[in-house]
Length: 142
Image (cartoon, rainbow, N blue to C red; front, side):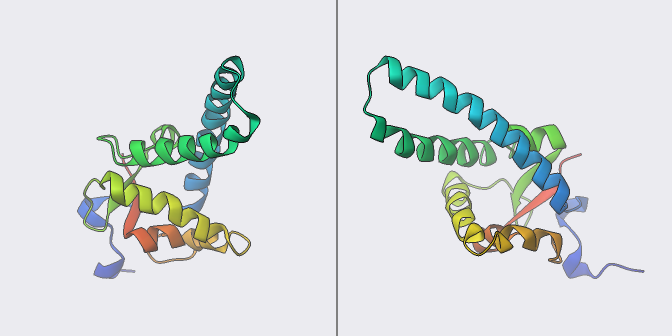
């Protein structure tokens, strides 16, 4: 059976499936927990007020995803470990601004029982809602 041209990934890459993306996210969460513990210890040693932890956490998560996904590697540590990367719809590296939009669009993907995330298992290009909002793809890098 031939795959329609509209469903073919850019530049010969294949779209990363839901479970591969999920596994990459688990690796990222583990990395972020370690980073969070280190930052919390530093803030504690600096006698920072307790209310600062949540906003600092949001900034850390945002920078972790946006910086790495817009970098030359186009992938977070988890995505690198699983051999996947984020591209625009033409297969190019995304800007930090687009990666930022993609990150905050993940909140929209999470609103109704994580349906926006689960969409990646069923859409033609394996896109989650936040990918559609940011006009991005997650493809196999290898």
